[in-house]
Figure 1 (cartoon, rainbow, N blue to C red):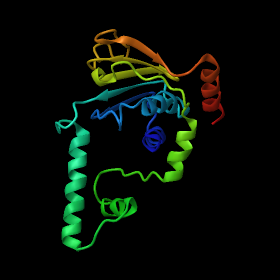
Figure 2: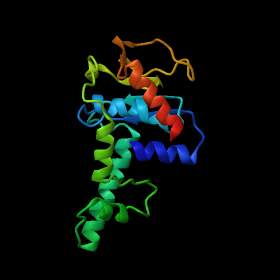
Figure 3: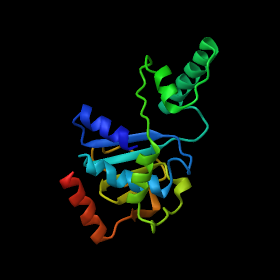
Length: 184
């Protein structure tokens, strides 16, 4: 998610970031990804954000459509060219003429981010019921069982998850994240 956040921030002057994805727990709804979401967006200048999870395996979201185009294009290129796509760089090269932005994330970048994640993160209660997380302060999120934008750009209290708010950062850690974003 880091390259996407940085890319969007360099191209536009948005202050609110909205992610829309499907919802597999190991990929997107994990406490690690949500922690990074609640901290990284502030480090690049966003003031608030939402992450909206669509139902998994239903093929209804924009990400599913983009994924389908990427898969079909890759299959067609392999079939037409008679060669294999053996790595992410090969795939990015084959997709360069599509209107899809491809980011290559190297192992060392993942390791660098993993080092930023506290080892004692709290789990988010009833994460499988959550369809929207709202963030307007580093390290802290609120969750809903249904996505709602009825008072956008302000937040409403519709459909809030029973667990309410998850705070990943202590006051001491919270200050260090804010200072890091100012220094960066």
